[in-house]
Image (cartoon, rainbow, N blue to C red; front, top):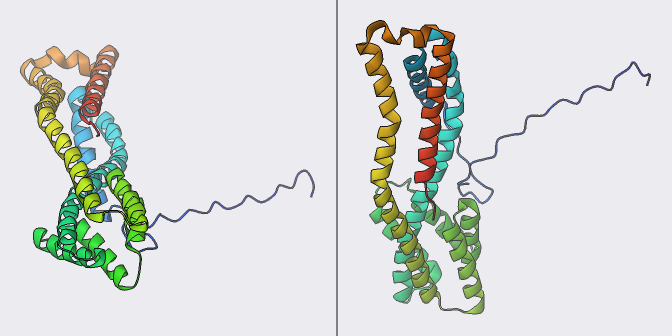
Length: 272
């Protein structure tokens, strides 16, 4: 091959999306893909909010339109929020399932039979058949009927969910099942630990609720003040929108509002 001849470039192969369900048939809680209508809804909502925010500070349609392009960043952020909330729901539902499972074991049922009883209890407690814990229990019961090991199914759920409480329970259950430990005591202790963590988080959320409201008010107050001054002072605010120095001041003010809002959200988002 001569120096002038170049090797053909390898075509970049687009990697396929990670499936929402694993090979075991269970839901992967680290993955969520928005459907097109949902994606367009959040994109339009973010674009409208960003356009309005920029227009308040710049009074310029072109600048506001450019600022609205940042809306494409919002659907991925919303996806992370959905994944987080889905895991929170599963944690609460898993706690309820442990109560039911513990009661069934105390009544003298085998673990396999107790899982079927827990499924029936969850179907009565949660009306929606698409409830996460119902789907998980249906998968577990169906695989138990095919001869699968209960400890492997719990470990699979722990891996897919990415929830520390479920992962800890699955490992303790596996060790206890293989060494002949007291399953009823494990269920009771696991339920108590998970319940205490959830109740602690709820108490903290109650304490922080007032602060979160104050944070939202503080974030909206500069916007409301800007609109009020613009509408009530006539041409007094025009230099802010028509001069280079005014645009710089507005940009700094807008940046401070955004940073303050994001920082406030970060401070009030406490994980246990």
